[in-house]
Amino acid sequence: MLKRFLASAAGTVIVSALVAAYVRLVLATTSWRIEGREHIEALLDAGGPVVAAFWHGRLGAMTGLWRLLGRGRDLAVLSSTHRDGRISAATMRRLGLEVIDGSSRRGGSEGLRRMISWLRGGRWAAITPDGPRGPRMRAQPGVLMMARMAGAPVVPVAFSTTRGRILGSWDRLLLPLPFGRGVYVLGRPIAMPREADEATLEALRLEVESALTEATREADRLCGRETPDPAPPR
Image (tube, rainbow, N blue to C red; front, side):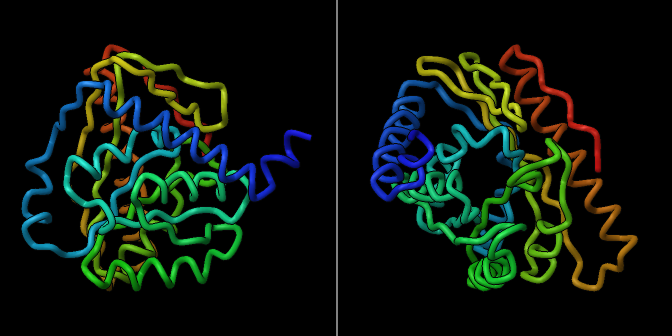
């Protein structure tokens, strides 16, 4: 019965409203700071496209970073058409973000085209390179393809907080709790050359993967918590 409720239109409305309210509570009651903002000052000034990449397990409070950076409606997220994806998409819309439907498994080609078009308009996109189903903390090549075709650099992003719980989900989701201290860590932008061959793209994929894990570990270190280990690669 619960699955039927979550799959229904009413379930999506109710659950997304509750989740969005909780996220707003966490963002409002947590003292946030940004580490590494200097890495993206030039990108913010230039106003060009950017792909912000973060691990799926760090979805919980990432919307707060876009608000602090002043992106708002100028940032889009790619959402799965699966039931969980629909709830996530509805939540993101409530939090003021643009949502583009499609994932690597369902509707991916159309979603990719729409996201590239969005980026070519000089806007930002937020991507989880290990989503929607993993392996955890292993970058898939889709983010590189998107960034290369749009002419956008990839910026590694992570968050952590002193008050939160790591759930037992496949992505080891960090559920932030209210009234803590939180940090967003931004890594150096990684350029995606249009002429990159297969070997270069694989090297860049590994660079993105390493930079994302490094940013996540740094955020956790600053908040005094352990970082989950990446899952074995496929």
